[in-house]
Amino acid sequence: MKSIALRAGFTPAIGLICLIFMLLSGCAEKKPEFRSIDLTGADYAKDFALPDVNGQTKTLADFKGKIPIVFFGFAQCPDVCPTTMAEIAEVKKSLGKDGEKVTAVFVTVDPERDTPQVLKAYMESFDPTFTALRGTPEQTAALAKAFKIYYKKVEGKTPTSYTIDHTAASFVYDTQGKLRLYTRYGMGAQALADDLKLLLK
Image (cartoon, rainbow, N blue to C red):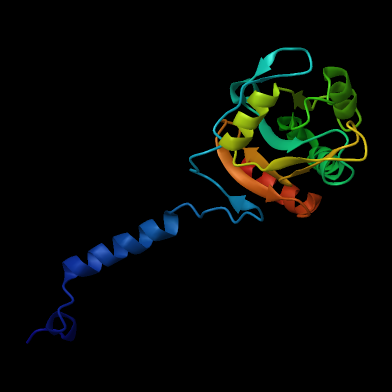
């Protein structure tokens, strides 16, 4: 008489397949649970090519082996930009030796006022190893479009007292130059540090 398992259609072959599937599922690499928005595989923000404060064109390839955090802002920004740069500097210090792999790449959306001298001093106020990039207005607009970044000049009382509304978020790349995360402003240094620890594993 056939066993209950065989009568139910559960053959040894099916049992073996189920066992293999369970073992493979258990061995499968678990996807990291980031606090930021996971952009792995996104088809935008793939690269940049803009001059730094010394006139040297920088691209993502220049940061291979590091975790570059790209942020679009301007030096006269009263809150979002300095807070973001200060948080990245704080996270870098908190990671100890691993922090040497973390750097900020600040892309100005205000090339009119953000001269190389202004940007150099601005970066040094947070971390002298941070990089500031400054393109022409046309280059800036093209790169912002490629990164899906919004920015718009808001006129002030005088021609030079304008401010700029802009996207308050950062793009985080892994050590191979692949886009991985989109971090919103206000997430906090600890959340960013936790995400970077996952990327560094």
